[in-house]
Image (cartoon, rainbow, N blue to C red; front, side, top):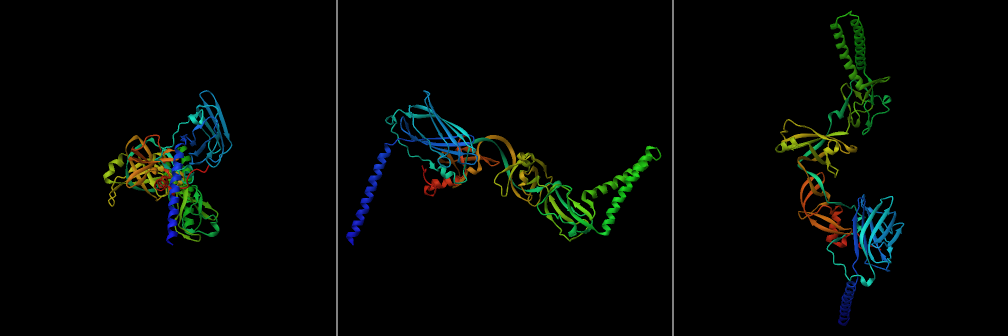
Length: 500
């Protein structure tokens, strides 16, 4: 038994020794390999990340070209690639590919007949995205022995491959200067404009009979002003009352026209004409007010919508007995809304002087700005809310696609400072790591660097960068957490290495 155990130990030791010798041999081999080249370039619509070996005349080289559609940060999945190399002597090499080898990756194989420094022009033609890239100083050596014996230095960059990026919700954005403004954070809520909110009441008493209401309104339906909502079969008293309003109006109109004719013939005094006109106009106003609310029908009276909008609430049912003045339905037009910001009394001066604000609401990630929603500040309350010691400030704005709902709470930023140009990045790029603001910078197509930054003003979804980034660098705005995971534990990354 002891001999068997001893043999096992010796076998393990010999395997370990062999492994070390094998690793050493591989390392020596790598020292004689040539370094590879990589290129990362961004156009307005497309990113190219290209890897290729050191090039020599007569040796076929494989180029690995990744093409990333920057509109969606997904691979270019179809289209053609036209590649042209031209050196200083006018020598040309051309290669055309009809389709990617796989999603996002074209793999041309190129052989050069002449050495020199080449300019490489890549033309992508695709229904998805089309673009042209120009890469300078592509060096081709006269022979392999002329290639410098350099090997790739160990990189401190975080590796996160294009294939990994394309599998997740991923995006980057260039650090740029933006107009940012100081603000005062307060709470708020969304309320309706009074003239775009209506509780419809019945001017008459009666019944909502089934047979006369086949088009009974439905919640959430959009109705136009003047649309018939309910047909009410009036009670005897209501019918008499409405008929009296109509009769009084017609009699007053006839009398005014008669007196006007007599006045034109100088048969009556002006005082008599004025009295007749006043009586007519009074009864006309009552009658017109009634017509704004009802339409006369063969079955009674139809209650009409006083505004354009959506039916938010229905307070009655078919068969209901309706009394005069009873609330029937609520209509809201959300095309223009009011943001009510509750500003602490200590910040009243800021709010009073401010002309603009931005806000975030529940269920929406994007910060919205009043001025960009065709909005404006409309008023500041003249008195203090004694319960919470705040002053209401009101902003009116347009509601894009009616996505903002009445009653939503809002996180509001009252703009009170001067607008200044500042180097900035989206808030989504920042990860809080141990209390420090951290971002991940794309140094090359698949290599990222962790940076700790100092921040300043926050405005409309962007943050001023005081220290740690330069204009033009690209930061990860979506997927930064996954890049962080790849840095902490490469084994947890999504896939490893290129599949050639």
